[in-house]
Length: 349
Image (tube, rainbow, N blue to C red; front, top):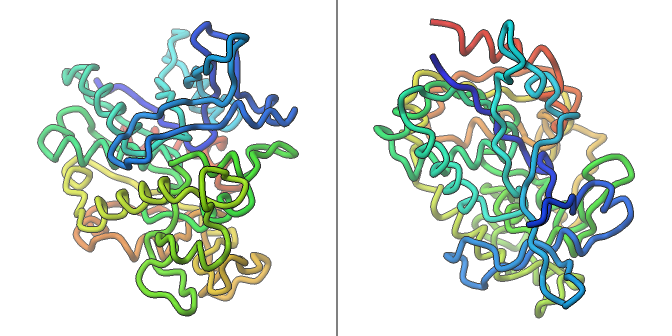
């Protein structure tokens, strides 16, 4: 008998404070309470835990810390609502985490949770977007032998295993979490996860070498590297170092632990124009025109073919890739068909 776990993506969990009060909700953003969402981290990229998880303070001026309290049903409805036959018990347990924080920090906590759950019944896991990156890091920490003790099969929906240009856009302009609800650029620039989800491939920016978007010189030349701590002036150089550390950790990985489990399935959207390059950075290409070079097919966030082509050969040949039309990257898992697909994968011999 296996257990089922769902790991949401960026924006997929809501928050509360230590007293259980809702805070940092989409409503707070709609009311432009941007400070609720500010994070603070140590300048040392190897210190993974955050210093503070909100810019809000209590009446005495002390920081109020927030943590993930639950997942957002609207975008994961079919998985959220599925119950066991003749029971009200949910089939899927949701892993709630603070999607703004360092991917390594959340991936480490995920691995700790899997270990604490015991190895008697392995997990079948569904992950969406950033959730897949946490699972990737957990598998690296575990290694093949330990990981397959706890995990049997995995289905990934829209996981940017090589990054996404949309993370660059979010650092430049902020990001929308719902219609008419957005986190402004200065807020997003305090979130390590966004830096760490930037592309690990070349964007072909003229006058640069290597994976240029990971370099502070690229951002400085474009006039969007903050000279100090004021993130209204540009991105954080210390948080950019976390992206560089993430890239360095993954560049030579062969993902043996993910290859070692029974089945690893990658589901990707193929019907929406998606950024792949940004030769005019900090200006991004016009998404209305798919040219097969700067704008390609994907789910609106993950470029499908490019992502697969950049994976290590042995890992790429060990996984199963499924291309499908999706309403958007955010709403991929709101589709009953995706739940049905997972059920078939988990039930098959």
